[in-house]
Length: 152
Image (cartoon, rainbow, N blue to C red; front, side, top):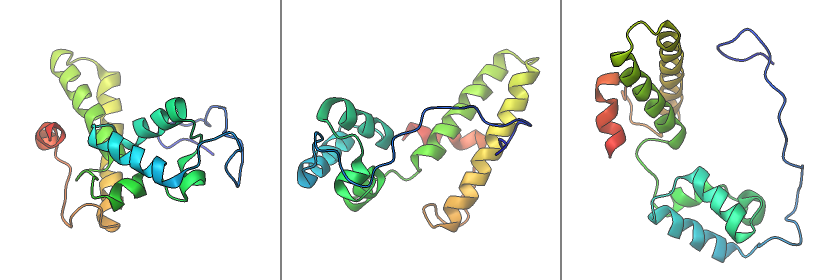
């Protein structure tokens, strides 16, 4: 399948092995895993970082196989979710860094185009999250207020 903003196909990459049950060697105590997720979230880690910590330090190769729920669902159940979803926050941060770069390098046309593409992805994601009610109705991405939103 072709990429969204390029006229070429994607690159090959490694794929996680297909499994339906938890490996025998892994840590599969559901209460312990959920407690660790809540603890790491309160420490300020994102859902992606929590997954990496659980994999590398606590022997949980896949949280969904071990608990039946994704990390994000466990975080939401415990009311520790942020007001802006993690993937949207990352894209907004990327666009903000590009804008700061463009203030100093006004003739960087490649970065200017990449900023347009990134902000298009942000707007598309905002439209999705407003439709699924993760963001309030009428929420709009504005580059001027993005830095204030990300500082929270």
